[in-house]
Length: 291
Image (tube, rainbow, N blue to C red; front, side, top):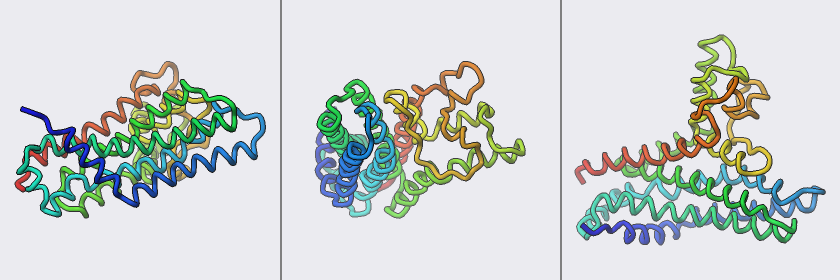
């Protein structure tokens, strides 16, 4: 049987590329990179391009998830809402082609956004600082593309699993708020109830595992391992941990040699899980939905 995933992906890339809000976010991301590099060049002495590269960590982890969720949350449910899904499925593409074609096409849009941001950093690094740490730059770019793909997968999976725009928006916004605003309350809060204190630096292993499974934490830990300096996660903090703990990775907080699932590279597994599981659930539900 011929796969029509590439055909659907091209259509999705064109459709998502017409979103003014999405391109506004992409423009904002590139603009922040340009402004940040220029400001650092003007105000900071004796700084290298390698040291400036980690500046990208904050705008990337703030804007990429939002752009990815916007790109993906209406991917499938939007077709169902308009009724065009019946027309689409009446053509050669089947439901498998629709889900994975939309995932591929929307991922390509976010990949373009990440690519433009890193291209701007490459050019500005060479212009302002005279050199570019290409190995670090390439590794950081690859990790950032995976980060964006993770949130596209989450959004497309939700979009395939639910039946209305409102439900899709509620779930993806809820997930984002959990990752950014509620993660500490949902992890450190129970720790406090169990042990009558907030998580210390050398916290229980189960808590460190939960910390690692936040995709934003996984991204910043992994990105920090490929660039010079540390990239801190964008997260609401409620003072349930010590200031030192906020600045350490799960591997650094583990007493002794950290197990593989707490090491920085395991962030790749975490992000792939947040990509694959929602898509698998959404695909399963979409395959069995009576349209």
